Image (cartoon, rainbow, N blue to C red):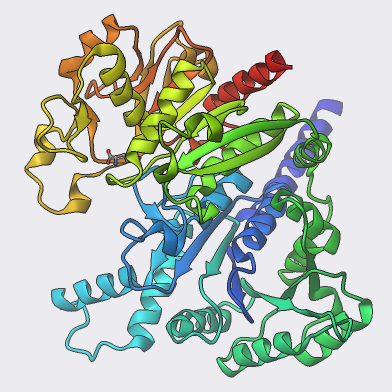
Length: 562
Ligand code: GLN
């Protein structure tokens, strides 16, 4: 009898659990993040922080960015214009905000996570040419807006996600943002119970009046309202704390509840933002709006541990980054963040100095790079600044300073070694000199047949098998890894034996093509070059093994110097 009762109780409990699970995960909710007043307010960080909080409650979350520019992707954008070009596993050249999404949520994004106006139009025009619109006049509304909505909703096609957060690039009021805001309006209208809009604005502080001003926020919300969108939650970026009165005023003018006016006070590290947003109740406001359970709160314990470590790490670690886009720190965003992750885990405060490679010469290299605990030579394209990169590599090699070369940085390390150690004095990459006798990096035969520049790139994630006993192997602690590429030229395997004889180890190789992915000089403290971009695979809760290894060597070097 007892066991029958038990069985019934068990079945009942299972049904309740399943029901709960179904109501919790059965449908996808859409959260739109728009921005007003000015650009660069950190919509990406707000979206990532919210994603983080919802994920820490056990929900399945993904984030995407819709970019209102006409470029098809970020591949051909100058880093000066748009910062780093981020690459997804499936080889999409994306906006750098996707890097934040991955670092905050430890997820993998894809080409569907970043859609531009160019791609929207490309797809609509292709459909028009195919005759899909059956003779109809193709217009912004409904055809472009339908395509935008399709791009948003396709992420939930397999009901994979409980929440899709869509960041709308640009600022509300821009001409080019209009079709996106219109699509948000339509979705809010079509699925009122499953959609909400968060609007991020700026509250400036007038020093002369000693006052925070809400007028720009009011205007920005008006602008949204004129387009038919009533934001549900307002996140106000500010350099000074907001008073309850100010929040009340904003709430009254903008038709939102006071609790839905969220303060986003500047914080020393972007990684504190999820904690701040939790304190402000951003995730609770979202869940309330969807009629979802508020308890238990998001478990941020691991995240908080990282932030605590970051705050307490006072001992500096001095890393130099040699590249050609140093005037704009966003150009190397992922490298910078990956170095921060690895430094924090080793209780160090990262002191990153950026060096313009064009300005490094044989005569000044020592003065510039002396005293560093580690040197990173950055990826890049084209001849400009290559000489200086090569000089920096040589300085690291001859002075046994921990070194990490990424992409072109790795290629420079190999070419420098070729010239100075192997004895190929005119060694080069075809990219820099098509007439060099020793083209150590060259296009592969199948690439040479392609004419369009974008077609010849190796993009996205590829497997790499590691050599046992190598530095890379001990850093990763595994035999096979998967890393992301974005380059055109490859190490020419015809030279491999000569390099090996001279002491270079090819510690990572693609198992299908045999292409060289990692090189190292085992006689030195830590000298590794990767053809791929390890920086794209470093997350706050999952720091990258190679960056961890590099920083550990740099820490050791710093200790030895004392
Ligand atoms: N310009 C080099 C190539 O295309 C390296 C690119 C990079 O740094 N990822 O091969």
